[in-house]
Length: 186
Ligand SMILES: [Zn+2]
Image 1 (cartoon, helix red, strand yellow):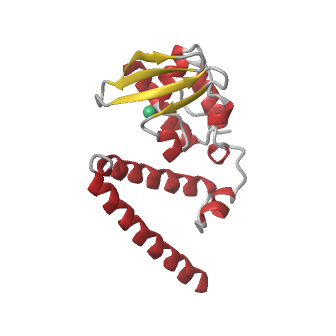
Image 2: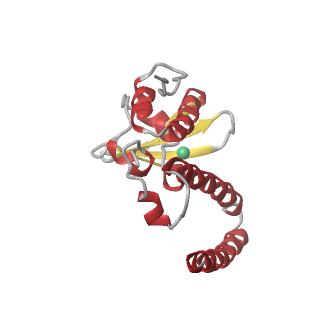
């Protein structure tokens, strides 16, 4: 029988957990992100009774991000917003979790749609993507998210670019809506 277990590039608990829950493509993406943790520097910016805020820098990029960690919920929120865009934790947030001695992915950050248990069609029903296997649809979704993330990063640097991006997104929304209508009529 073929061994389908993904290869772990480091024998650590977080990766073992990720390899068990995520689909192979998502696991590879998570693993790439996790390996960056070792190249991240971390400094505390502020602390209250509720939360602590860190400045985290990935030396490969040199960009600074702020990560808030809430004690009661063990919630992490990073200014790069990778989790919102892609659905996996970023290296900055993982760095903070590691700093807090949390050696697993907290439940609230495991998106059902990226797990092996996700029902086939869950993504389809939410995004109206038609055709292809669950794995393929998931990969397309991730690719699109990455592309949008790059565009957002560029646009966010200038206010006028943000406005222009929103106008273009509105046009894109209309084009996609019309295209999906045409496909359904075929
Ligand atoms: Zn981040």
